[in-house]
Structure formats: C-alpha cells, structure tokens
Image (tube, rainbow, N blue to C red; front, top):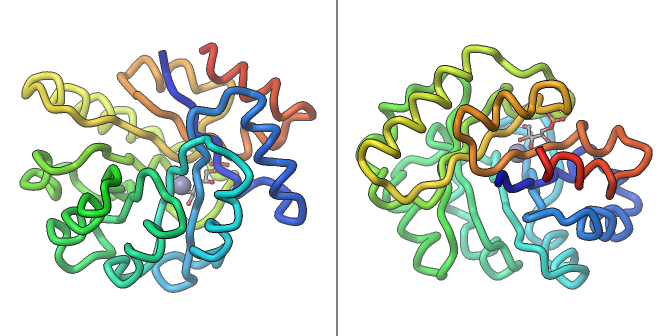
Length: 215
Ligand code: DX5
Ligand code: ZN
C-alpha cells in the first residue's frame, strides 16, 4: 500500500497546528515539510525553529525536504528540530556522500532528491547509502504545478534498478500529484507520494488524505 506524505506548503500557515491535526486524523504516514531558502529555489518558506515547534503537535514522522543551497550547513539543526527523514538535493550539496553520512550519523533516514532534469546516474555511487530517493515531478519551489510527464519513465527506471539490485530504497514522488493521476503514478512502483494542493484544495482535508491513502 502506498504511503502518503502531505505537504503543508499549501496549508494555511496561520493555522498550522489545526492543519497538521487534520492530516493526522486522515491517517497521514508522514508530514512533508518543504524548506526553501530563496536561493536554491525562488521561494522562501520556513526553517528549523518552526519545525521544532511543530514537533510538539504530533507524533507523525517528519519528512523534511531541504530545498536549500549547501544543506550540509544545517543538517544538525534539522536533526535537533525533530526530523525523521532528511532529504537533500543532489544538485545543492558539494559532497553528497559526506552529507548523507552526516544525516545518518544522527540516526535519521537519508533521502536524496533529484530535479526533473537530473539523471538517475548522478546518484549511482550513493545508492548503497541512502534510504529514499525523492523524484521531483515538478521543478522545486512552488505548490500547485503540473506533473511533468517524462518523470513516469524516470520512476519506472528507478523501480527497475531497485528491484534488480535488491536495494532497500524507498521511492518518493513530489509535485503535481492529484486525485486524477495518483493511481497511475503509484502503479509505476512508488512507495510514498507527496501531495500538497491535491489535499489542501479539498473542503475536508482529513477525508481527502484518507482517499489518497486508499488508492
Ligand atoms: C515543491 C514541493 C512540493 C509541493 C508539492 O517544490 O517540494 O512538496 O508542496 O505541491 P503540489 O502537490 O501542490 O504539487
Ligand atoms: Zn517537497
């Protein structure tokens, strides 16, 4: 069964506590937290102090997606704030393997995100060290964008690599996943779907979370 990681990027930032409790009620497997710095991506959201406060609200694991330049500068801060998974962009860190090792040194799961134009080959030599690959299915920076259809091939290819080599890596997809395309994407072999606007556009956020989980 697919796991659902709702992104609070499309939530009401003035009522984050209530919004997160709705996701918890809907059975969210993770809470996806999109950290943006205005440099690596053209948008700014929130950082580790906010995540630390949100940690008091729920026990649902935090899936922290760092869209920041040189994330190696802040791994400890996000670990201390209560992240369970920390995902960094392959394109944003100078020494990818070193940063993965640092995330794991705090006992956390390490994810690597790839932008739509980045080849799977770029992470060939770190596959033995990561817990998750986050395949960006939109360009990072904003919620509510359209799924990039060539990412279907990328997901399938990653699924084949993992299965053929017997690797223990979860595939997460992020961006443009809605009720009308989620099932098809899941069937390519995705373990975790991130859904932002597809959940928060609903009148009943808990109910919509349940619907995605049941796909
Ligand atoms: C985009 C973020 C996503 C975003 C997804 O940079 O990484 O997590 O919130 O939003 P939707 O589901 O609206 O495309
Ligand atoms: Zn994200």
